[in-house]
Length: 121
Image (cartoon, rainbow, N blue to C red):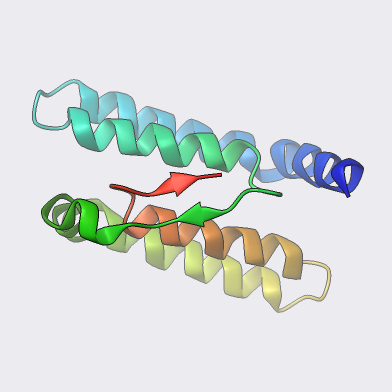
C-alpha cells in the first residue's frame, strides 16, 4: 500500500499538487503581509502542505476549538475555495479514473472551509 500511496502522490504532485500548493502559498504570503492576516496566512500554509501529498493523509477538523476564527475564515476566504474544490471534485468524479482524485479533493475542501483547529495526519 505504501508504494501505491507514493506513486499516487507523485502523480498528484506533477499534475495538480504543485500548482494548487503554489496558489495557497502565494495567498498565505499575501495574508502574512498584514498583522491581522498572519493567522489566516498560516492556515493557508497548512492547506498548501496537504495539497502537495494528500494520499494517505486524514484531516481531523475541530471546529469547536476556534469557532470565531473558522467563521471569519469561512466568510472571507473559505466558501470560495470550498465551492471551487467541490466543483473540481465533481468534475473529476464524473470519470471513473478521476474518482480517487475527487475523493482527495473533497478531503482538501473540508480543510479549506474550516482550517483552524484542524489537524492533518
